Length: 173
Image (cartoon, rainbow, N blue to C red; front, side, top):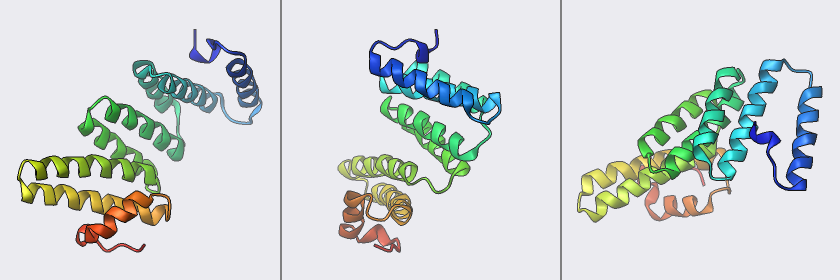
């Protein structure tokens, strides 16, 4: 049974019925409608912590979805799952794919920077200054782009960039 038909409470059921009705009435091809249903079911599974089911639904959605912005959003959600599962390399790879689809997605850049900054701190704690500088520079690069795309949206990142001198990255804050 699709997740969209397996809701426990009244509000979820009512919202699901309403959303499905709206999707059915929309003047779009059935392929796009099915892609949306897979995406929505993936998001629901992700919110419930069922990452395996979420990934399956997202993958099915990607097979059907042609819209680059929608594909990017799906890929971003997949990357979030990979990141939370500790697979940072796959998360980075997936964030990059999302950015190919939609280069103006600051949350992908922000999350990539989190991974780079974490790696920089680990290298710094291990006494590897050159390696830590490389990771911090990567973080500064993607975070600078994120801040440009979403000014005022990431104050903690803006503060990091200011206090680190932007890691020699030219930023406009």
